[in-house]
Amino acid sequence: QDQGKSSAPLSSLEARHKGEKGKRGESTEIFCASNMATIDSGIILMPLYALASWTAMLKLQPGSYEIYVAAIGWAWALLNTVLKGNFDLGVVTFAFVIAAYGIERRAGLTGGIKVFECIASVAVANNFALVIFLWKDLKVQLSSSKSPAWLNVFLVYCITFAVYWALVAARTYKRGESGYAVIY
Image (cartoon, rainbow, N blue to C red; front, side):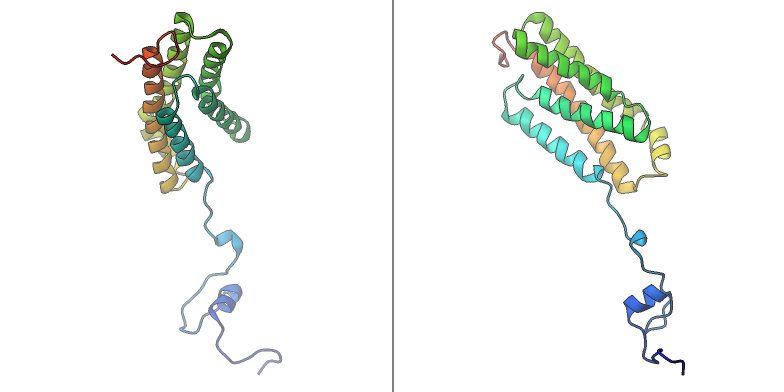
């Protein structure tokens, strides 16, 4: 017998570490951190952002939350553009929403500002809808680097926000000069 080696069967962890056969004779693979599954942060952040945005829409007055939701979306689009090297149209469309609702905060709600807010909100809705319409090709492109779970979350996220920003535009259109939604 070799010096320093035991004839006792290896534990599962030792077998994985050494790449040898375990107690039951099954073949195991080398155990290391790089083989462990990781979770893309987007799979958690996308639903959280959607939940917070919808909660704001349902609980707060129109005109009071949109700039914050847009600011988060704009920052996220900017990070995607800078870190991934692919231009994210959200950098432009969310900037329009921030500008429109920012002007309202300074000047109050006027007919012209309301139109600007509606157009900006529809632009963001269309940006999300664009992903839905191009999904077949985007899914193929993204599937090489993203998990099926991430792809599903992303598609639902885009559908959710296309509807969300369309509703923001509709609610904004219904707002009276006082700033609150007019109920007929």
